[in-house]
Length: 229
Image (tube, rainbow, N blue to C red):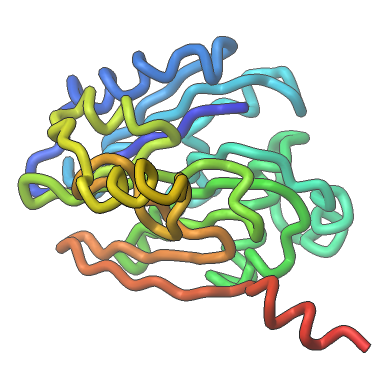
């Protein structure tokens, strides 16, 4: 378990991203990191629980060799060794599955998620295209919450990190009503907090530096079971 967090907007505060990282400290007690990118318009934060490659080579946020891609990652790619062999021409500097995610995005772009077998929440700043690429595993094992507040886009593993950055803690009355009336506690994309959303399982999302958000489903359980013989 690791913790990811970030802010995109015209006014990115180092103090705010530091607060987001601090409140998720128990998710990654082995290391923490913060990067401010894109001329101060993007901030990424990470709390690391070291599992693969315990050295400093696994530090995040993790950048590609040319510095154009920067990743924060929570989860595990079970087939990372197979993918690493397929991506053998990439100049790997660590033994982590996180760097395999970077290499896979470098090779296949957003389609890289279709190669991954595992559980993951990914946020990757693509400086070449000035956008944030986000992805959640097929069954939504790893959390990814986000909000739009004050003209900015914020994301984190846990809602409390969004609150630490100034997102208001207001109840979503419809979600609470459905829960208290019918016992429905999980709705796709919704949370119990007003204006705080959850990236749906099996989805990718891109966020441009000016705040435009696009979603795409890359995997659907119902469709896949219909295709079984």
